[in-house]
Length: 336
Image 1 (cartoon, rainbow, N blue to C red):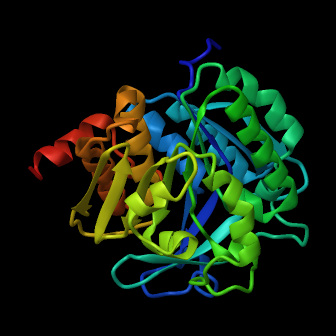
Image 2: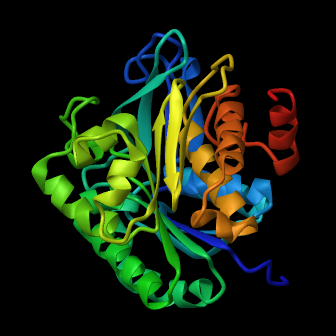
């Protein structure tokens, strides 16, 4: 098979199944026929969204040798995502996340399904495999995109930190989506719990090395005591580009000397799972097309990213509704 285009963005972390309960229902207790299983996981979502937008991407992670792993393998290959860094686990299963949806489609994450008593494949991401796969990918990449979930498990944390060091050494920028999910750190934690001091300490090195940081408004408040991206940028040693999203309300950003706030595009929400990942993919897509925006950011890049997020809310699951570049532009043309 001929080699595909050189990935511009390498997405590292979890790939999993989001088990969506019926609106207002509980996926942990509903009959299987009442739930909707969708492939997801933030880095996997971003990799797939980038590929659909037209920016070559790679996914580095670990999946079980099971039906979920096979489904991801097929989907990503169909999308054109580079899988040279994908690990398959013969022992641990792929993770299923239970997602509650309220009557308006907004979601909250509960516990997990599929654990056979020894954890999940994404927790067992091996540093040695990452260290072998990453250097050729980094040679042509602009971004390494990561989240904080791998930090919640010792093996995957080691693999993530090894990847970050390789990216720093290769002068590849790091895009960090904080993506705080308390149940990944403590299965008994409430879904709305903030990060513990230990979790904040684990995140700090990533926050201080990233060139682009995306946070939800509540994450910004927990970690920095402010939802203002200008304040957050000023408080970090590397002065990264910062984007703070607030669900269906607004997005605020600070890129270089450019900052601003814009309301989210109103859409009929079917399922908001993956909207933030589509937003980040849209932003990275624009930054790959126009790298200079990182220094003097443009509202147009944020508008495009917001369109990607809005379009994903209009369909079920995180991956299937992801737009092409042309579809995002067409959406924007109706909102001028």
